[in-house]
Length: 296
Image (tube, rainbow, N blue to C red; front, side, top):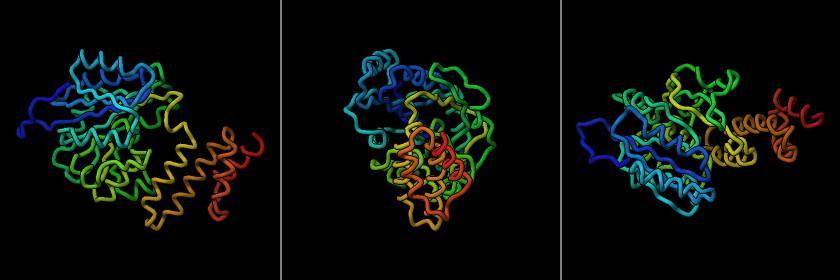
C-alpha cells in the first residue's frame, strides 16, 4: 500500500509500521487487517528483521500482490528498525503494529477522529481483546483489558502504574511527539514502555479509548512470557527515569510482582529477585511468592 502525494487539506496520512521477526504464521492476518482499514490515506511499511522461518518469501508475495513498501534486512532489533522506518515515513501519525496482532477495520478512523483538536495527546490508544495462536477469541477471564473505562495517562500514571496502561497493539503516535523525544531508544528492548514514559515526561498525555480496537494475540513466544527478558528490560527502562523520587519504590514493586510470577517456574530468577528486594519493601506478593518458592 503506497500513499498518494500528501495533500495538506486532506485527512492526515497515517503510517503503519509492521516490523516482523519469525512471525510467518501470523503476519498475513496482521497485514490484511491494515489493508482492510476504513480509513484513508495509509502508508504501510513492512520490515522483515532477519527472519529465518520463511517470512521473507511470504512477505515478498504479499508485497507484490498488495503494493505495500517491503524491506528485508539483517536483524537489527525492534527499536532500531522502528526508528529507521519512522525516518523514511511521511505520516503525521505513526502506528507501529505487531506482526502477530489484528486491527479492527475502524481502528485508525476512530483514533484519527479522536486526535483532531487535541494537540496535548501525544499517543492515542484503546482497549483490546485477546485471541489465541489460532485467532480464536479467548474466554472471559482473559478479557480484562476489553472493558477498562476511558483514561488519560500522564507520566506519573505510567511510571507509578496508577491506572490501567495502554496496550502496544493500539498505540498511534503524533509524529511531533516521537521527534521531540528522539524516537525509540535503541538500547532499550522494551520499546513500548520506554516510549510511553519518554513522551509523557515530555509533557504529552496518553488517552486510552474504552472501545476495543485491536486483537492482541497470545502465543508461546510473546515477549511478556520471557521473565528474564522482562526483568532485565523493565529495570533498564526504569533506570532511565531514576531521578523520579519514587524510583526505588517502583523498582521494588516490579521485583515483587515478578518474584510472585517466577517463584514456581524459574526458581533461580525468583531467588535473584528476592535477594534484591529490601525487607522494608516486602509485601503480600513477597509472602505468596515465598510460599510458592518453598512448597511448589
